[in-house]
Figure (cartoon, rainbow, N blue to C red):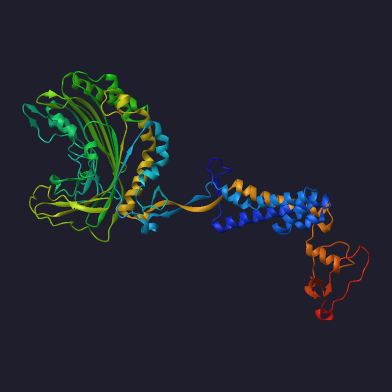
Length: 621
């Protein structure tokens, strides 16, 4: 086997079975043997070396004896050269096998995930991590299907997620918002208030008063299913904002339990978003999750971008750096980056910095025919410890969650464990229910009950967007990496949806591409095989045209022509083969043709002696 990047040398022609390839190479080897035989037959004919010609069909012992008897004569050299080349070209098939590069190809065929259920990994990870490097973005783009689809099957199956799924008429189903006053953006799922939203209290601290500092909640305003907040507050509240994990979907199970909403939280035991999703450092989180109430299950796709820039006390942010960071995260469109609201946000950040305060501007709104909810926040915080500023951080977060599928299950989920103290929900990860939130929930007020089930089907955390401790915009968020995220966001989402469907929704809806190992040959091997056919055919024709038929016939044909066809001028293929036998003449067995013994005589007409049988000849004493 050889290695080559040349398309001419690299294996590319599928053959479906190794036997086919073996037959082709064996035929090429035989044809090359025919070429050598016919070539030297022509050489012998031109040299009038008929004995040498006959030696070509003898075994190696007879040829060796012939060469020894003839010495360095032309006849001996012809037979010697033929023998050597015949040995060399008998390895022609081996040469063709040696040119494998690599001798097989992977042929892709489309299938569904369910077609290979027997080879599925029973415990695939639901979290995928990807560290970006600006020098390797092109390669990462090519490997995205393999990265997102990793570990879904056991080793041995060469597959690729295509990002194609079929909803089979299970289109997203939403209802008209049950209420809009004071609730912000949500995706409404039933008339009882069942809905999903971004974190609706991310703009509020958990307590409204710390020491002498008071948070003014009037800075948050709700308006017809959306909200906007523009808050400047004391640094005493900053630490809580910095330590809050961003991108938490909030599930509102009903209007009756509106004050007891639940979050789909990252699992502390295995999910690094617990730490990456807070504090400093830029990252992108995408996930697919489901919420199930009764028999109704809804599937969502979410993307959360978090970008930060940090500086030390006494080294304030430059306005230009803040401006650059806000504009680049606002949109990839330069026209949209000129939105006047950007200037207001920048002014709010700079004023807070100048007055030793913290600042938060944000908004949420619905869209996509009520199937999506968007929330973005631009914050400037200066956390304190014992009234001493620790650092200042500009934090920009953006969350987009969209309902992508609604369906009715045959059976509603059952509680994973018994819970008598509070309302609770099942919590699943990667399609497997592992716990409930019973222990962490507040005691129920009134009748206790089971809400339903939430499932973080698949999550991808992308790091390496920039330096985690820098007050320079270009370092905190690498522009090449940001552009890569803009360009590949659609691909990432489709692949993540496919992964989420495969483990938590319905694997028969997910299309994969399976690469099957198939025997193949290269165009070089095909050309060399055809060359053997061409050379053998041409040399055969040349020998027929350029020489007497005696040089193209076999020993049998020449023998029969000499002994049994006195009226035929030229030998050729025999249609009626005579009976060749061995007869005993005295103590010797001789060759006979149709009962007539072969004898050697001078080249003059002579009769052939009839042989009746061995009994007519007395034994010599």
